[in-house]
Length: 375
Image 1: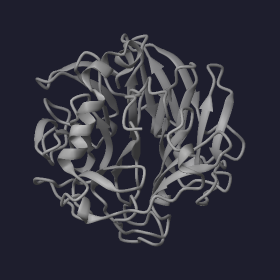
Image 2 (image 1 turned 120 degrees about the vertical axis):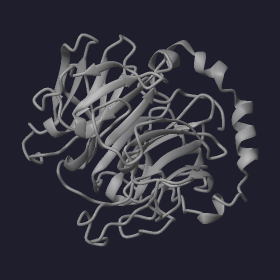
Image 3 (image 1 turned 45 degrees about the vertical axis):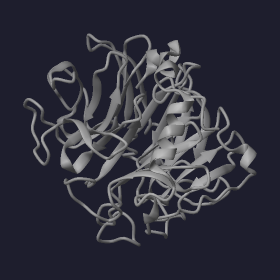
Image 4 (image 1 turned 30 degrees about the vertical axis):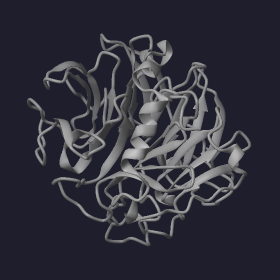
C-alpha cells in the first residue's frame, strides 16, 4: 500500500510525530491489553543496530517470531521465544509484520492442526499487536488463544496494516472479512460478511491481505476466490484480476500491492510465482520460485514487495528463505537456507522456518511509509 503516497511524502503530512506520541500516551503501557503479556525481545546486537535502513524485518512463521536482520545475516532484534514456545510471550505462526517508526505491528495468525509437532491440534494466537523495541505490547486487538468474531475477537488474522489515521486494517481470514479498527478497538469499516464465503457483493473467501491505496480504495487478495480485487468504501469492486478467475491465471492469491507505475504486484502462491499485471490484466513480469535445484516442489511463496531499487523481495515460504531478486530474476540476497528449516537467535545462516513476510526497513514503496518518528 501507499506506493504513490510514500514517494510524494503526503503521508508524513497526514501522520505526524505528535500523533504517535498521543497514541502511545493514550493506550499507555499499563493498559489492560498490555497487561496480557510482556514478551522478551532478544537482541543479538546492541540497541544501536535496531531499526536500521536496509535491514530486513521478517515474519518467521513457524519459529513463532519476528526478526530484524542486517546485511551480514545477523539478527539484531527478535520478538518471540522460538519454535518451541507457544505462549503469549511469542507471536504464534506469525504471517505479517511491519515497522511503524520504532514500533512493530504484527499479526499472530496461529498454527493450524498438524502443522508443527509441538502443536498437533493447532495453537491459535488471534492477536494483532504493536510492540516497542523492548518487546512490550503497547496496543492489541484480539485475545491470545481466543477464537471469535465478537468485539475484540479475531479468527486467524493473517495481516495487519497501519493506516495514516492510526487505525489498523486487519485481514481476519477465517471470519471472511477485512476490518478497520481504531485505537479504541472499535470496528469503523468492514468488507466481507462475517463468516460468509462467496463471490457476490461484499463477499470473500479466505482473504489473505488488504492494502490501502493512494485513492483511498482497498486492494484485497481474495485467496480462495483466486482473485485480487480493488474495492471502494461503498463495497463496490472497481477493479479485479483476473476478470474471470481461472487457476492457470491466478491460484491462491496471497498478497498484492499497487506499484507506482499503476501496475499491481501479485503473489500467485499456488502457482509458485510472483507476477506484475497492468490494469488491463497483461502480465509484464513473472518470477517462479520452484525452479532452482533443491527447491521444494510446492514452496507457495506468500509475499512479494517491489523495492525502490526495482528489485523484488520475496518470502519463499516452504523454501524456508527470503530472497531479493533483480529485474532480470537473479538472486542478489538470501536469508535462510533453500528448502531447509532451522532456528538460531543470532543468525539466519542456520535457517528460517516458513517465513511468510519480509520488508526492508526504510524502503516501504510497496507497503508502509517511513514515518520518521518514534526512533
